[in-house]
Length: 410
Image 1 (cartoon, rainbow, N blue to C red):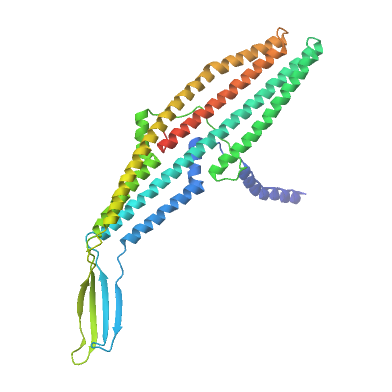
Image 2 (image 1 turned 45 degrees about the vertical axis):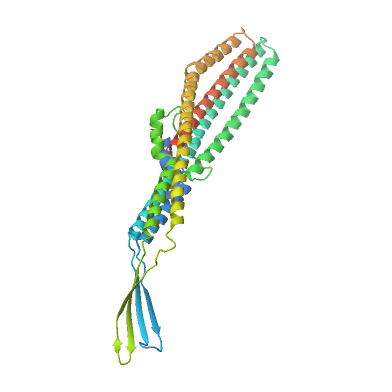
């Protein structure tokens, strides 16, 4: 009996390890803050990872520009004297052509930073919309659950008054109808929460049904900068402005290379003539060949490059004007939504809550009809829904400002 007990205890201990591991794997992860979610998305997002791999391609282009041209080797056999000739051709880049090729490749490498910032800007906006969308869905689900509880109390009160003979059966039917609508709204809120969860998991590169808990406040946000500060941030981070600046610098490097290539590039030839009977067995020869820029001096290429620089500067100026308008609009929307949120939080919601409480007490005491209570409860529900809508629009305005700036507003 003792041995049997020991074997059972040993089996329990051996199975405890895998069971504990499975329990740990199934345990829900800690709730994500927006900052933690952004770090997680940046480390997992496939689009951002693909953009980052573009850097390796541009770095390889720099290596290509650093390479020296290979020499050419030729061997000729003729009946003339000398009968054989071995030649070596060495192209010599002059006028700083090779250095300018390297500078051009390095300048093009900076586009990798622009691409990464543009991808990160898109990721930050998508995450803000998905994260606070799920946070808002959680709040709407809690609101729907509260409304169901509130309507159930109303139905119980109507049923109690009906049984006492103090209210008609019409009140019970109206209360039951209100409960059915509230439960339907609750089901819709749960479905919306599932859809919002799938949206956040898509940004985080996780399975759609992966359980994720988010924590935060829909009203939380760093203080928005003033217009001058926002424009300074946009000038340093906005994707369109940065791309225009980089493209202009690249075209300037290309123009410098074109001008350097106008200098004739010589090719030095070393020859070893061999087998000249009666004269020599192995001789030596040196020669230089180059193109003479008599007709083509790259006038067309230079004009095209100069026109491209002018066009890029014009596009940059147009983009800056668009950014100014977008920044001004986003700041105005943020301030308007902030005031709206504050009004709901400090005035509308407390007043609607007090009105609903008073209407419930009045109905239970028989001093007012059920219709007044239903209207008060509907007004409270609508006020809370409008409050959540205002919070969602506040976060959308923040997302717009971050997108046009090209980075966080903090």
